[in-house]
Length: 163
Image (cartoon, rainbow, N blue to C red):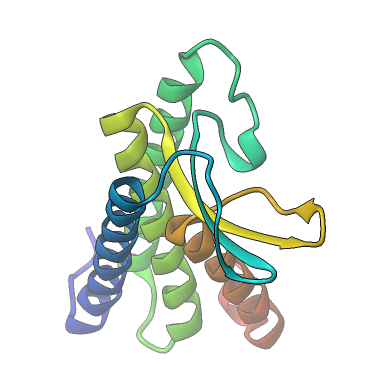
């Protein structure tokens, strides 16, 4: 097992902080918003409480319940893989470590919802006129930002991804 250094611990602490922020905002949304009722913040941004029993863009949301356990198992496996990957990174691989930490945080945040509630709490809604992007949450945002950072790292530091 790779050695846990201060640098590696800091990336795991970042992931933990993002998970805490995600769960806190989902708790606030669940307590303060009425399900399906938009609260306009800006002309293109609403807070709208929704429950997603599927994956991204409600994929398999009406599959009958098995998807909860499938996506939970998948998120658990991916999360363990990401922790091991973070622990094996070199100190200079900061952007890759940050991207993996954000992806890990998003996976764990949504996993927590699936295991505790049976669905993922979404509440951020962006739109243009009558065109709505599917509702999402902080965990989804962390995964997206992490993926973007990973792609950017692949372009800037291809030597980190050659193995």
